[in-house]
Image (cartoon, rainbow, N blue to C red; front, side):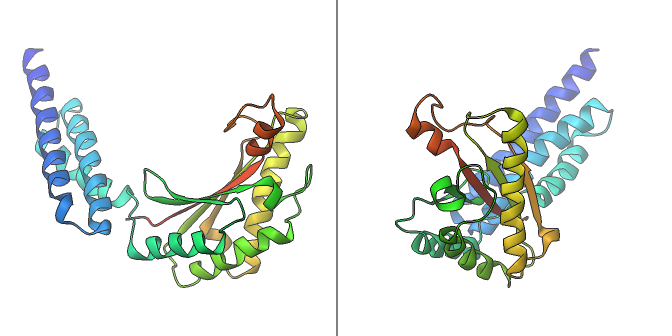
Length: 220
């Protein structure tokens, strides 16, 4: 039993050391290399522990995990940064929030007063002005993947809110498709009222919760 525990401890130490080496060099890396290195470090930890737990060699597990982590991570490329800047400029003054997430995705948070009328899944004209430049930026980037998530406030029942949030996400997907973005690159989901950003007991809070979020990622 002790030799198993010792093996697992050695596996953890190897994994942590591998991750530390990868991350220590990030200061001199490009954004693409940083994303890949981070993914590899996380994969190394998982691989080493998996290899130890299943009786394999910790070093081998860390190496395999590192490869998987590098493949599974996202990268923040120059293209992504250029797209973020362009979308910030295109949406200035609209209330749309353009941010980079912790896992290197470009996120557009589009409030309901830009996107949809209350109780409707029909895209408003103001949202087309946001989606058109976004779609244009994707045509020459076949590796990019898009996730669209619809949200509602707490008004109404789940029987209304859940399908409405899905329909809104699908409306955005269909609009992007009509602008040349392949449907196979787009995922949609609806969260109903389950993921509020603000207090649903106030008008301002409910308005903030009615939104569509678009996530764009470039797999490593």
